[in-house]
Length: 348
Image 1: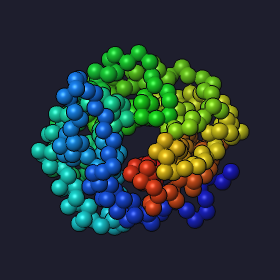
Image 2: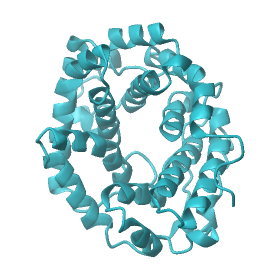
Image 3: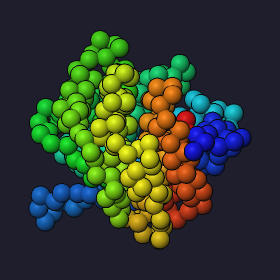
């Protein structure tokens, strides 16, 4: 086990791939069809609306949450590798997208029942976008952040309402996964806390510790399921690394996944095989490899110097990255409409 492969770094990989990722995202946010429509009909005359009419900003990239992810990707690349992307083109696209009128319509939609389908995954990604803009000292970003503020406020309230009633976590490896959704929302919650509004941060922290603080001996050997794009085990560990004090995380991890030093359970260290990327469910497994890589990297970086598990986790991160990153650009649309967001999450 060597940790970082010789001659490679996450930032160098991102710098070399950023232009391609940006072009994928620019194409995705404007691609209206195909689109997934989720609509609860209250009667025979209640036909689903055209998605672009309902969601004038986040209508592209097959579904709402993937479109939110692509917008975050573009903002993130502008912040961290501006020299690697077509800056003028990206800024112009985001300026068109982030209109106050369009985002006000998105906030109105998010306050209604239709956005329930996006809990907590899409909600969390939208707050990730809000945090990215709020933390960037840039004139355009400040304007876009102001326009996004109504949507962020609605989703902050929806998270608080949900956390007040959610008795149990969702532990599967797709959109409903509680740990990943809360991990996406936590940076925004901490931003609010720094501005004197700690309610969301405190609610997330309390619920996370209640749900996951006593978990031991997680059965990671049963992963993955056939259409996972998240690892329930690793998503939970990544979240606990965010929430627990640094001195407490290593002990929690020892109880949660006691075999990590020995590379066990082997299933968590073995990249998933993707047999048919044109199948929207099987295609999720490319995302599983990318999200596992991100979790492994986060776990490695959260362990103290000298902890032997850090090198083990970093090796696993690179193995999963090598399995997923070649498929980010040029793959079937069932892969390409979203995978780049996970690549940027990993690499930046």
